Image 1 (cartoon, rainbow, N blue to C red):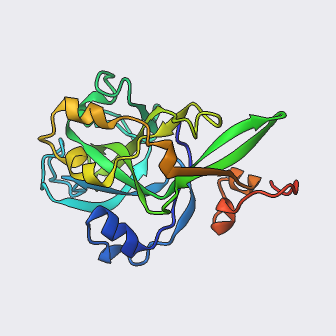
Image 2 (tube, helix red, strand yellow):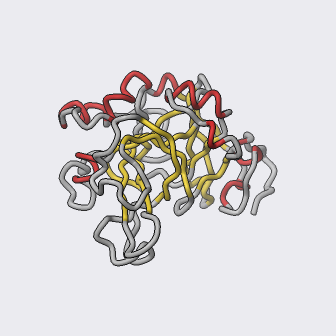
Length: 241
């Protein structure tokens, strides 16, 4: 699964990687410990949060950036706080599972990140590891999104990250990893016209030779902790929460 990640790249680097304007997010601070239930930066088409927006995401074809809650709230939910709110959707079943198939067909997004954490048990202790591209460039996690509309007030936009089997680098740490959409495929993932076969073909592990992984301090284990300390390489010191 993917349960924590970072979004610490400078906004100009994110804007260049995703081809979107980020002027209105100038106050957004770098994040080193993004957790489920929080607002995450995504790029999507038709993700308008106005009350009169099309429920199926069939609005503008322009890709724009915005924030969504991490944890998918289906449109039919009685309220945003009831029932399970999946943070991940498995690539193997996303096209057929009722909870995800409509969003996969019509409402896909790119979750902006630059690395993710996984935990490996060693000598009875869960050790956190950080995984990112060797280039240190921002990455796009494949995502799906939903719009939940209350009786009154603004709609809630929420999302889940698509995961796949781990590549050879990640497998010794965890058996799953987020699907990373290559820059050349961003437009295809977001476009409503992309046929299912092309979408499924993108749901594969990122090549391990372009990635790196290293152990980090248990400081990141606490969801309240934030900052560059989260991604600093671990030492042999027992320090940690």
